[in-house]
Length: 99
Image 1 (spheres, rainbow, N blue to C red):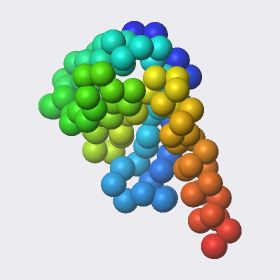
Image 2 (spheres, rainbow, N blue to C red):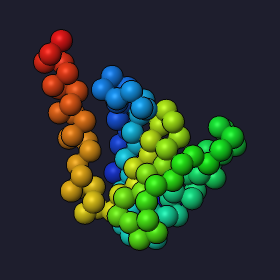
Image 3 (cartoon, rainbow, N blue to C red):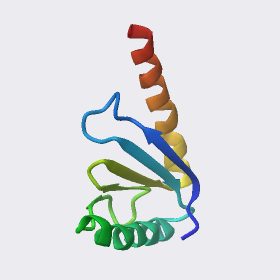
């Protein structure tokens, strides 16, 4: 589906709801929906379900929740605006400073 700038963040130490975030950039909302549908189809045989989908049809951010892995599919502007890579890097750094 040609998602770009794929990043995997291990967040298990700072979040109790999941172990990993996967971040993907899609150039259009249509491409985002296609990536989400393809991922659901690929994962279903592995875990027995498609995972929970959050995000509007025309949303700039789609979230797929597979329990231990949460996939975020962004348009470029949304990815830059929410900046999850830096948000969780700062959270992990703050945790390291405390310990």
